[in-house]
Image 1 (tube, rainbow, N blue to C red):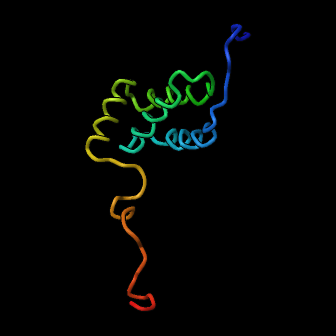
Image 2: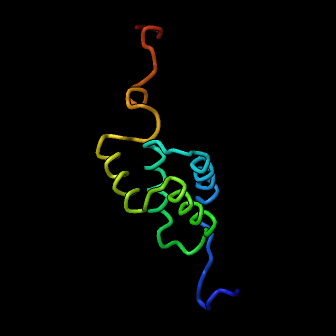
Image 3: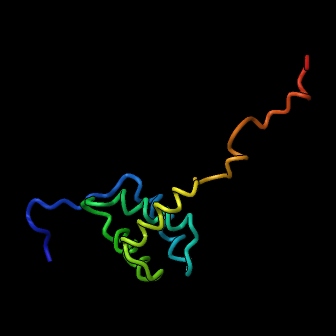
Length: 107
């Protein structure tokens, strides 16, 4: 089946990285808060993007596996973010310096 004239199948610049994220999520039977936030973020990134079909199909597949709708995913992601969720290391670990000044010269 050929593409309609004028349609473009592009590769997203972050597709390889996002494929790793999607593959990790596909291994989850039951998502954690960070997984839901991650999938919602990826749906936003690829919304209306003309390409990366296998990635977008796997994102839809995750909704089926996790038994949630896109609307439920978005509602849960908003609630997760509103509760103070932030991706990455815990805030206590991410703020401040790990440098110990007691060991420095002149201190």
